[in-house]
Length: 100
Image 1 (tube, helix red, strand yellow):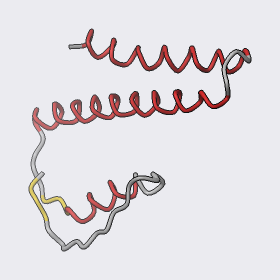
Image 2 (image 1 turned 90 degrees about the vertical axis):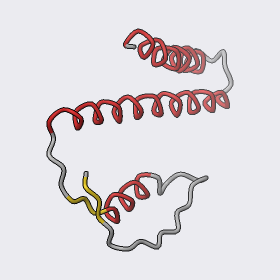
Image 3 (image 1 turned 180 degrees about the vertical axis):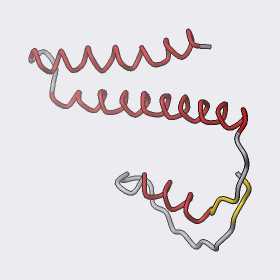
């Protein structure tokens, strides 16, 4: 699994580095920065999934469950995406809890 993860993370890093070096050396158009942005989005997604998996493994071990306010969690997640152009949230939340 670690070998697959390393490969999945290494690929976008290689693309980002090669495009950045080409832009720096003047052999690439500045518009190619879009490729760099796309690859960083891919890399961010993979790292986020890895961190979520790590949290799940940690919670599965010995954690005690306690009431968690869903309203707070949803607002926090929505706030993380507030600067994304293509994402818009309309929240109508109650004060629900779950054991987590």
